[in-house]
Length: 200
Image (tube, rainbow, N blue to C red):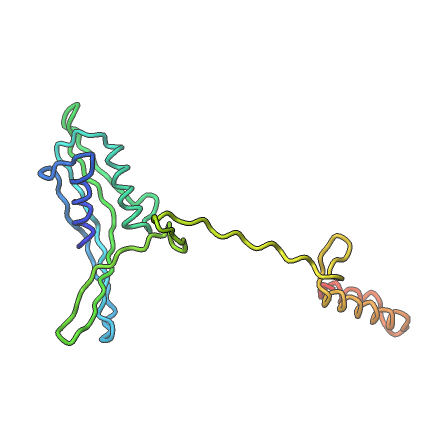
């Protein structure tokens, strides 16, 4: 469980100075997803990470901000209410607290003649997918869209843009109406009702 070890290391080495002796990290409600495909032995882990801090004397909001910052990078698919917490205030300075959130890990299995190599895959950063980066690692701006092509001659009718095909179809309807309106055997009421029902 690489992510669980990562967040422990992250909190201990962060400037908020979490004391390693007061930090407990463990996983609960873990499950394994596997396709049981002989051609693909990769699998995924899903578990609730439980972070417990005893005798915590820092600012709880700052601690939450730091953990959310880590989750945004390492587990960006979480829901808005993904973090649960419990706080037990010991006195006016110290508290025991626990935070729980779901983590998942994809384990890639690569087969070799000598055996298998297992690699815990990093999460793709959804905030940078599709971006191009400069030499310094800074995201480059999106390229501007090319200007719209000017409308072709004859495609504009009054203030509305209409395709030539639509104009041709309308002309055919008008010509056909001109042929049949004078026919005494045509019920014009029925004719126009049919045209309206067909959206013409």
